[in-house]
Image 1 (cartoon, one colour):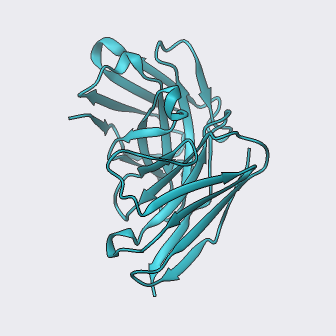
Image 2 (cartoon, rainbow over the protein chains, first blue to last red):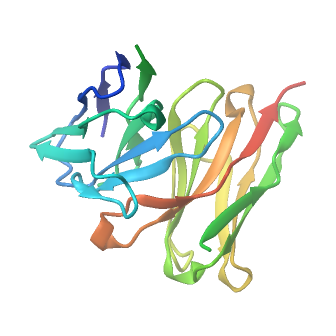
Length: 106
Length: 121
């Protein structure tokens, strides 16, 4: 199952609302997760089951699903949100990740 | 504290072998499926391998199939990745990751800090 993530990079400002999209090549139900990764660090789980916020993750993060299209939205960017974001399907093997979206300060 | 700590990375020549370890603490390893994920320098995440909680079921990514073996010792709270016939393209940070229960749609909820593997002559 291929995941096409867009955009590959994004420039935004603190306070902006941003949306990242992940499209699956076939149906994966809600077996989709979103991760945040900062340079030199391991990925961190943000959202699982397409739209459920992981414990401890700020509520400005949200996820949604429409068929094979998934979105990660950050409602109001904070300085600590500038990072790379990945989607992942855990529906079937081989598990796959999207190519990543690098979120940079404008 | 729930924690995963990888070790065993290093510099190895092409064609060589390496065994990575992942030590789990703060939770009962035997009740979780586990995975290895790698990340080449400056690149994205690539899933490498899966092993079920009992160790009876394993899966591998196409890029490593036949060269890599995942195993675990639940009594020692440890996960392993045996890598053989290493190639330059295997150069990456290798992470072990815990697979959450089905109620969380199997997301990877705990990650180690990673161990770097460099394949070069």
